[in-house]
Every structure is written in C-alpha cells, then in structure tokens.
Image (cartoon, rainbow, N blue to C red; front, side, top):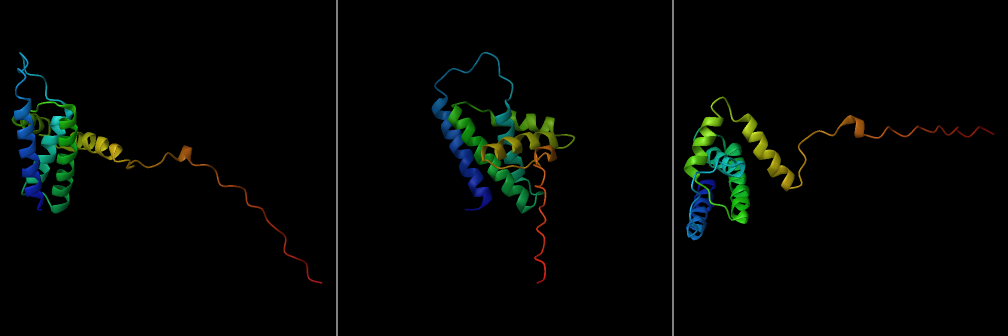
Length: 137
C-alpha cells in the first residue's frame, strides 16, 4: 500500500466515522480547532505535498494515523477543512513549533526518547582500584 493510498484510506475512515457521529447536533458556535485536529491536518499536509521527500511523507503518514486514532478514540468530530486552514495560518513562518509539539506527543506515546539525557542525571564513574602486580620471586 502506498503512502498516499494509506492516507486516503485513513481519511475515508475519518469521514465515515464522522457520518456515524453526525446524529448529534453541532454546537451553537464552532469550537476552536484543537491540537489533535491540527496535528492530523499537519500529517496530511506533510504526506501529500509534492515538495516533501519520502522521509517527510512517511513521517506525515505516521502522524496522520496516530492522530486519526486519538480523535477516533475520543469520539470527536473534526472539520478537516478548518483544521487545514488553521495549520496553514499557524505555519506561515514555518511548521517548526507545531511539528515539534505533534512529534513530541507521538514519540512520548510510542515510548521513544528524542531528548538527550541530562548530564546531571548521569552517575559519576566508580573510582578505579589499582591492584599491584605480583612481585617477582
């Protein structure tokens, strides 16, 4: 399955899931776009942009599936068009901060560590013990 096919399948599942949830009335005023929706939209944008290399598209695919699962598990509805517009607005000067926030939650949930350990947490090496060489007879 190609990356684009996988993303298209994920988005189809999102739309079908939202159709099932559509029986509840929408809120009177639109809620602000939450971070999960922004991260989903960022993953879709990373995955579908022709300017991105294979590694970036693969990372976008992982973010898309991860945040799609979070949104689905929470039973929330997502307006993907609003989320994409929010991501476009927020990332006009670069996607760095949003990308870092989305990646941090993803890596933490996977049990991965991306930060370097604090040198203060590293124990000091044990003192060396010198054993004298046996003396010649």
